[in-house]
Image 1 (cartoon, helix red, strand yellow):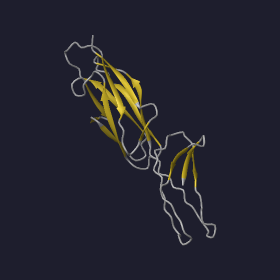
Image 2 (spheres, helix red, strand yellow):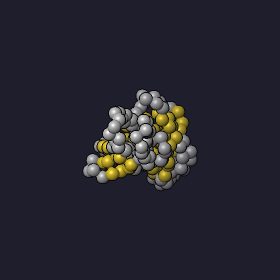
Image 3 (tube, one colour):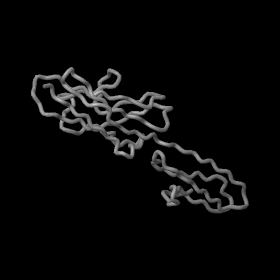
Image 4 (cartoon, one colour):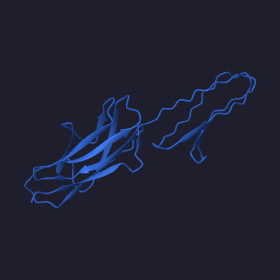
Length: 178
């Protein structure tokens, strides 16, 4: 079994081999992280013309997860900023997404994160049939005069999904109250 991209470039081939006319069943697998929007082609060669062959092509496509900016945050109010995380592909099961937070603001000290009113830290779970979640980034309203800070949230690598091609990160600016 060979897997090719849209330009005919071989991406992967199965490692199994079959030989001899007595072989009746051969199970071969190719593991590959498919990319959303890309077209793929599979080639299956039959080496035994004396037998009738049937092939089943099964794909287990991992969802693609990405994050995007919606709005900034402010201590005035306070007003929460938002980052939207979406998954494309299969939604028939739940999916836990790992997050990585970078930037100058510190989770717990400068801001909190929540989805649907529930606090989160470094991961959350998409429910079955759910494809989008809005993460609220709420500044901690303190009496300190601080410089403007940032929260850069990124979808972390995980074997259960593919991180979006855009590196799936989004930043929210935390403005201090005047």
